[in-house]
Length: 344
Ligand code: UFG
Image (cartoon, rainbow, N blue to C red):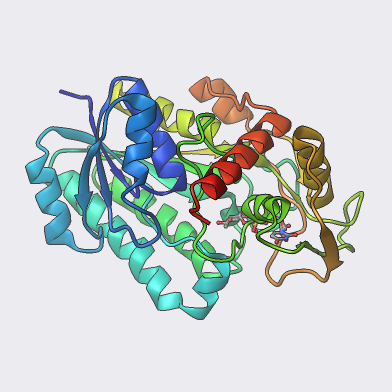
């Protein structure tokens, strides 16, 4: 009875990997996605790994009646994992209202329906973007929340506040908010992975597309940061490790083990790597060279951020297990599989 989970954005990058882990752990999954930045074929990839296609509901979470109908058609949903959101930082600067609408109206609908439909558990996709450039590294969950540097980042901060206020007012509702660092890699089967829309914004898909020859060269944004090699530092976390944390978070909520109405966890490795270090690791792991040029900084980028994941390690019993090299190999295998299927 407690085993049916609604996953919004379940055909997206982190969502699809989480659906796989949920199904492999015996959960029944209902995916709700408007396919605005993903494809229905992802469901076949999930089925090829798990032997089962999740129930699919093509709806927009901003449409409350449609979302309500999903709860009604799939009676017994006990928890929601809410991934569905717009996530391109640069685009959010150009189209702030789209971001505020997509990311916040959908959350309001979900919180309202969780109360109305007696599905009181939420796992929320947050981001290390809420920390901005932290004063102290590695960053812990108690670090101050800095003013957001983009409308996208602001939606994550506001979303956390909306959740905090809502669970305070309605003690039935419980949430685990997961602050992701930089997700990367693909499922080891290469049946699902990241599918960037057009030219990738993010580093790893740009690296793999350059390595395979779709892009001429990678631009390394910034060489004058206050870091050992001058390029910016991030905490790259393997997407399957990240997905597993969602299963643990759901289990925690369903078992009533959460300590507060809303809990926040950093999901990272605890290891910061510069852009140049990532390129070196990629070349070592795959034997493929990545042509690059060093250019100026990208507007809005923070200089360096990596997680202190010790709270998630001790409280959730979760740890990032996959090495950077193995993670990058999966990203490369995924790129090759896309190429062989003529998808890019
Ligand atoms: N980078 C390059 N060249 C590229 C792309 C990226 O040098 O072509 C660099 C960036 O400047 C940055 C690093 O690689 O230093 C990582 O960039 P990503 O775009 O992959 O990731 P970000 O850290 O900028 O953004 C990610 C998520 C956001 C989230 C943010 C929080 O994509 O959703 O982390 O810090 F908000």
